[in-house]
Every structure is written in C-alpha cells, then in structure tokens.
Image (cartoon, helix red, strand yellow):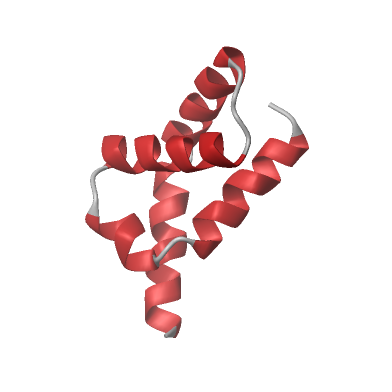
Length: 73
C-alpha cells in the first residue's frame, strides 16, 4: 500500500464524524471507509484487500482516535 493511500485513509478517518466511527460495528465501519475511499479514487483489487487488512489491524486506533475527538469537543 502506498503512502498516498495511507494519507487519504487517515484524512477520511479524521474528517468522519467521531460518533459515526464509534457507533457502528467494525465490519460495517471498514466497509463504509472502503466505499468512501473507492468513491474518491477507485481501488484496484490488490489495494482493496491491502486496505481492508490494514483497517482491520488499526480498528482499535481508529476507535481510540474517535474517542479522543469526542472528549476534546
């Protein structure tokens, strides 16, 4: 996975409503993020698989980041 896709992914996570990130389940959250990224720039099959695996491995960090944003508001 390239750095541009990583930056795009984290930019999307940071701009997504924190409550949305916290309220939905892991599988649905990952599917939403993948769909939104794919809408911005269509993903190749290999990129989609890589990003899916990456998001699964970072789900705790995504949720922790969202929680921190909720507290700071």
